[in-house]
Image (cartoon, rainbow, N blue to C red; front, side, top):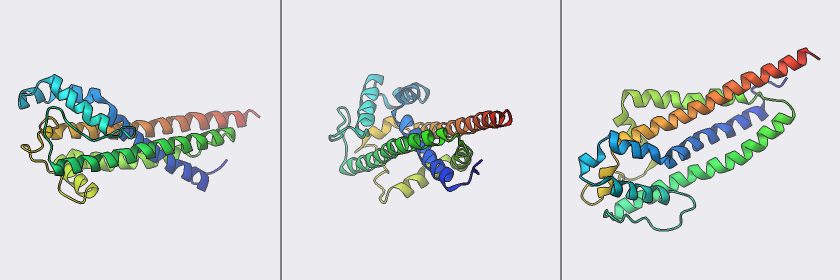
Length: 219
């Protein structure tokens, strides 16, 4: 039996880890019910005086804009936008489109690798995938749990080379309907998706390797 740390298994594990992370980001970005729930949970209507219909409409426009399949300018029908705000949203889109492309490419490569491994009944890549996947959410989860505000600021300082992410409520009023708590919920959902992916790999690896071991003993 091939060891879990063989080059082939590790290469496939890295591909699958990238898929799990990027897919978790993409799913969270497009999971609109999370934001719809937060409209009430975070009292966005009460805090802003803006109707839920308008809030949903403009949020949906923002999410549609961040799709890799959307080709056009970002324009909020009910909110103004500064030039720095427009630049920031363009940079955010570039990041999200990057995650979408990574998810698509790693899905194709990962699926091909899994099929090839399955033909050889080699499931050794599943354990390192689970182990590598768990590391990131463990670190991020601990950081978020201890100091979300610092984690939020540090993320933006790492991802952006300017301070355009610091919005002015007067010139970019869209920020009024995007409270920090919502982004924390997004981070938690991303971490949850990664943990779920790691769990699926761990459980699948355990079951498949036991079946393989059982069949070998019965030969």
